[in-house]
Length: 165
Image (cartoon, rainbow, N blue to C red; front, side, top):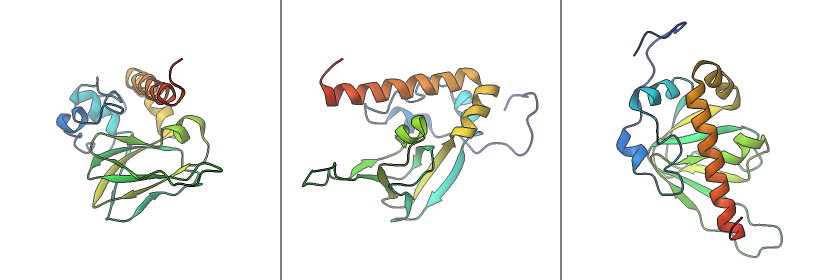
């Protein structure tokens, strides 16, 4: 890694393979997809890497965690609570390598509205709001790309629900 000013400690964990980032479903592919491998390594240095066994709950609905999750390996399952007055529970949504979860809570600080659990063994990178502030101070281009991509992903979801602008 390049000699960054004030870089302490051991080397960051290896980056997620570019293939994993590029193979994400269309809705999430844009999240940091423009980063080079070197920039991805710099981003990972600000995230916390966690491994979960199959069935482990990563985020519980109602939990205040405010971390953005990147699936580094394996698959996680996102289960939404039924909307008030709804009689059916939405089916779980699988997210694999390169996908993200926790966007809304990360952006607005509200408690999680979904439950996220590992389908099998899964490795996740978690970026807290505090880590984002550090990222913005030391790697502003990467932080700006992240916020721009998150905004675009949320706007895309809104358009799907609302049917346009």
